[in-house]
Image 1 (cartoon, helix red, strand yellow):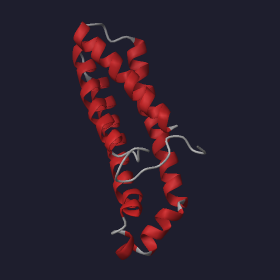
Image 2 (cartoon, rainbow, N blue to C red; image 1 turned 90 degrees about the horizontal axis):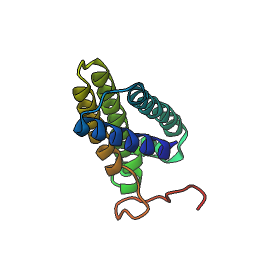
Image 3 (cartoon, rainbow, N blue to C red; image 1 turned 90 degrees about the vertical axis):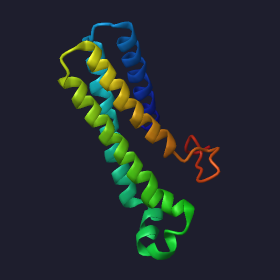
Length: 143
């Protein structure tokens, strides 16, 4: 699901940039892309909340907060990752709503591009990439 969030955001950003700079009409496909990107992000948020609630790392984080907060890996998943991902979904939601409310096509595209772009940057900065020197996890589970 996490890869679907990234893919839908990238596709939305592509369509928004192309529409905005090309002065295209905001079509039903663009509207559906906006809507489904926000929907996919919300589904991921609910899955993330569920995983957060059953995670042994998070249980340890809350049980041993005073020591766990000083452990980079535990703190990352207990606070940083979760806060930033919720923030990203909030940004996507706001951007989706604002774009929907705009009257002019150019403003719809621009609004979608700016808000979704900021959300993508937040997400990319908060993923435990396999190459990260701070906190890393495999890109694909089971590998």
